[in-house]
Length: 79
Picture 1 (cartoon, one colour):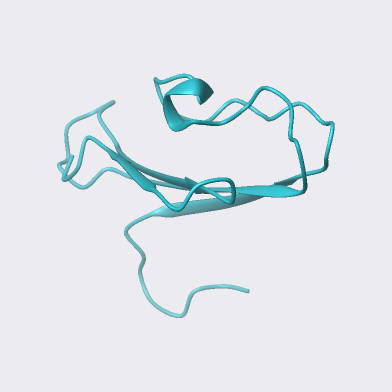
Picture 2: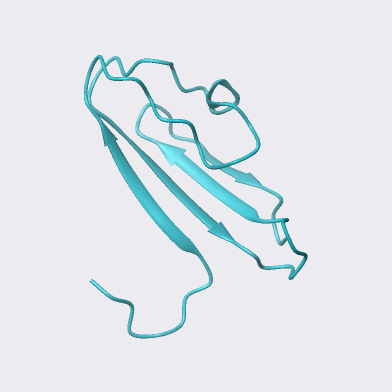
């Protein structure tokens, strides 16, 4: 599906099967910083979004969530 208007973020969702290695998140932090295990204990997903809201080269707003937590993590909000 293609967006029908401009978007501010690039998005990705990844599914991980039980027993598979959890992929590294697309931020400067480690998976443990987001309370994610190294190996998926059950079916899970990771949803991530990235944007250059502040216009500073190389500094991005990252938003991440996963199915093993109810939290939504925001890094560099507004950048």
